[in-house]
Amino acid sequence: MSTTFYMPPMSMMGPDAIKQLGSELNARNFNKALIVTDKALIDIKLVDRLTEELTAHNIDFAIFDGVKPNPTENNIEQGLELLNAEDCDLVISFGGGSSHDCAKGIALVAANGGHIRDYSKGVHLSTKPQLPLVTVNTTAGTASEMTIFAIVTNEKDETKYPVVDKNLTPIIAVNDSELMVAMPKFLTAATGMDALTHAIEAYVSTAATPITDASAIKAIELISSNLKAAVDNGENREARDAMQYGEYLAGMAFSNASLGYVHSMAHQLGGVYDLVHGLCNAILLPHVSRFNATLTTERFADIAKAMGVDTTGMDAIEAAEAGIVAIEALSHSVGTAQKLSDLGVKQDKLEFMAINALNDACSLTNPRKASTEEIINIFNQAM
Image (tube, rainbow, N blue to C red):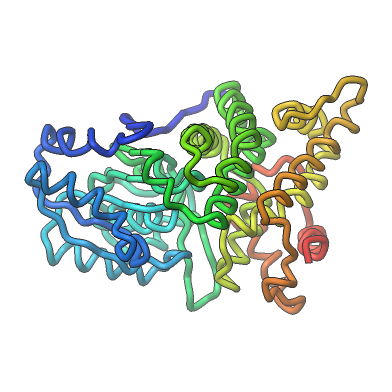
């Protein structure tokens, strides 16, 4: 069976990578950018690193700073209105997955028309390339800066859905590890566990290939050995740089192999309770992993080795369990090993979320198929 691999045609990586951006945009003759970000990044003046680079290269810009942590359909509509009013020919997202996902929605609808929901009923539904999109990343987690995914919240229906479209791929992704030094501990931990989840779900996905496998395993190695150091000391440049590469490699893996039940379930927690996505993934990952490991034991044994577990003398079942224990230990060490009940999740919503999770596009590539009752049971295990 043939496969297709998607990623940005250009990625700028490493300390001060943002300083390469202005000249590249000049070479492409862009006139005015819509910067899509959130108020917190404005308040701490981190966005100044981008606006100064644009100003130095005589590129005009307008700023939309209304992005919510779980970006909504309304956020996309608001950003699109500003983009049209300001006559922008480029979209630049600045931040983490929330900013990137919102910007992707704006750029896709700007070029193709309609509503962002129109592009969620299948895969690769748009007919035109999105308005040119550049992503400047400030977290080592979602990898939305380089994927074909965008996650959008429908507040009215309490649902959160993925848009999967090749035309969501940015033309330039910027991963400047210096922009990540300012990330607080909890955000570092939650986004790091999100990246680990991407790599693990991609590795056991039914759509995995040798290319995505290589990306996923290296991502697991980098994240498992550097996340705690980055959480403990945000000024640790070596750990920040390693996490930047780890989350990008995880993005290469899942953007092409897709994901599984951890994400489809976490999306529902975000839609109903507006919870932090990476934290939801961290809580669900061990439970979904044990569910999947009964069918993909050898793959989870590989994951154990990538997590740094000495599996000498273990059979595949023992190694797989040791790897899942290592995942739990890492989550405990960075403060994301919590319970859903502590976050306000209620029993009366579990069936609603389980049904929607099984209808989520990420469920299609989970290696072991579950019933609604089994998904409810996994939610209960995490309660």
